Image (cartoon, rainbow, N blue to C red; front, side, top):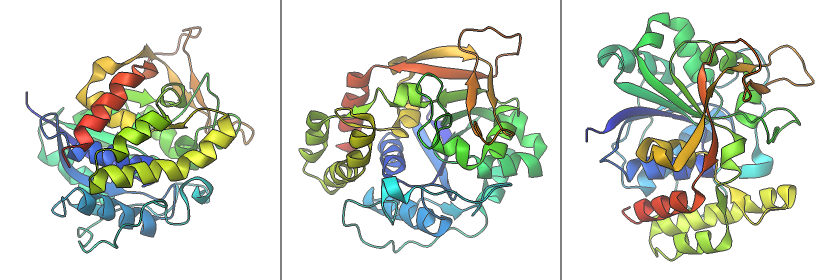
Length: 313
């Protein structure tokens, strides 16, 4: 099996960190060409820092990490320190990164990479707001038809929103960017709250991370210990949703997931529902399908895969 070439676009975030670790631990299925950072969970300076910390934790200081857009296309930046802590990676005590950021802008790297590789050979994996991806598409419209697939974490329908009653955080932060991406014509796979809220880090699952007895296993356990306090209180659930690793797990083992190919539109005009992903799950409109909207997950299989792969690092 030839590994799938991907670019991870991210705003780490503890769950982003776990998604990156899973990708770096899975070279048979995934070749990470680079990591591009965007403002989201915390400002850009911290997301670019955190991505390098995670690469060094995985022993991959060779991985190019690029800083990208520091604000949404047309709105003020909204961040989520109330969930992820002031650094975005609160929980474990991890050293400051020694690796430098790669030279150049993340958007330029995305464009150049898609143009340099054969059409349909590079998958984009956005784990945060879609500002970098939308900016690349605006600057270089020719890349849309070169993208193999965009597999993203964002949105929600039956689960509603997690930052407003209607909107999931990643889409809400930059709804104009999300609208551009969902209209770009590239194949889309969406991991919404509807599926990520079924990937709960329960105590036995977190104990399994800690039992790996490695720096990675301990760091992941401490990360999920930290941010689950917020989600368990908010949702009354037995654990916190592990959102972003669903993207990576889908690339490795898509049979863990199920969904529908439907039309998904992004609300960009109403402040009441700004950033809502209007998913035509029941196919009640005549709007053309533009995304595979994932709705279910084999959670036990997901956490088994995640734990086994993290054990490699």
